[in-house]
Image (tube, rainbow, N blue to C red; front, side, top):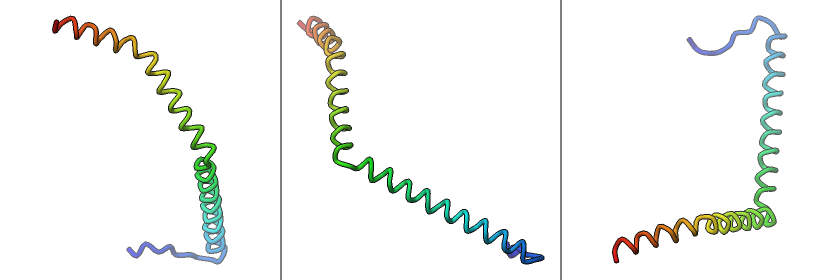
Length: 81
């Protein structure tokens, strides 16, 4: 089988052409949106905000985990004294 569609009238051809055109337009709009979102997320202000947020999260996490580390290190040192 060749895989080619056989049309019996011009209305079918026109319908498929219109469908293909609309699919093409949708793809173009999705590409534009994707580009815009990428451009927005790569702005220096967004990158700096993300970096600051990451550092703040890391600092908070470190403050929360430090007592556990201290406790663990204390236990470890007592074991080998």
